[in-house]
Amino acid sequence: MTVPSSKLKVVLEPAIEDHDPALYHAKVEYAPVAGWEAVDDARIEEYRTRGFLVIRQAFSASQIEAARVALESITRSEAPQCKSMVYEGTIAGHLQHPCPPERPKPGARTRGEVLEGLPRIDAGLRAGYVRKISDFCAAYPPLQALATQGEMLSVLGRIVGEPAVLFQEMALVKPPGGREKPWHQDHAYFDYPLETPIVGVWIAIDQVDVENGCMVVLPGGHLQGPRLHFMRRDYQICDSDMQQVTEQQRLALPMEPGDLLLFDGKLPHGTPTNKTAGQRWAVQYHYVGERARVVENKEAGEEGDSRPFGSEGKNATC
Image 1 (cartoon, helix red, strand yellow):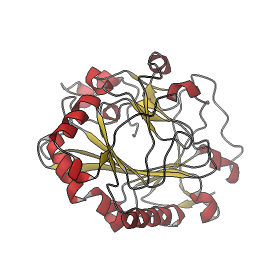
Image 2: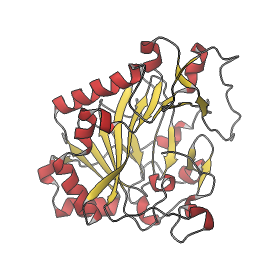
Image 3: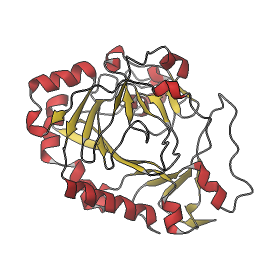
């Protein structure tokens, strides 16, 4: 059963087939920046060349703890102040459904099921199955504070060449056994013209590593432009394309709480299944320059639309 909600969108993820672990085999060799003051012109150029930059201790321990408390309150609330809540499909075993979702056949296309409201089960149990939360900053000051930190906005402005504005906010959770986010490019999910610089900001709320689903990236892959995406386990780059990339070309990015990853919207990346017994928390924001404009007439094929990434992602969300 579910708790009715007139404003909140609640989605139950479908079960997905297991991914090939080799898709995320990667080396762990990168040089993070030691704080905002170390982000000089050379580091900005490194971002442009490699497509990402990790900044150690971008936020204080108190900021991260306040953000965690706010996120946990959202997952347990009977009236969360956010736009959507997405749950792992495995929560279906606790609901009054005829049966849990069946495991799909390999290659099956998957989309989530929209529920009528929050799952009507114990709040603590329900919280353990949250996978994604969206649009919450306005109601939760600690999360707004992360999104508007002055040093970060200054660096973002240097990257996009003008004041940067926030256009997407999400919390990304991997419960124990939490599902993979397959290889993809974030720009494929948005309606900005291809030439628009989009910067993703991924903030570690927990320690993240190769076991609980840290980010794995393809350095320099953003310079190769759009890759075709298909609706399979998610809206994703085809596994066969990523299987051609060697382990030495991929890079895993373990991070400590308060570390921050800046990454280009066209950088191929993904996160594997959480193999641990604990939750893995992260917050992700996306920014563009203040003059950026979305493609208004995408269906009519207006120049600059996102169709070079493939047509199966209509209404898919990052």
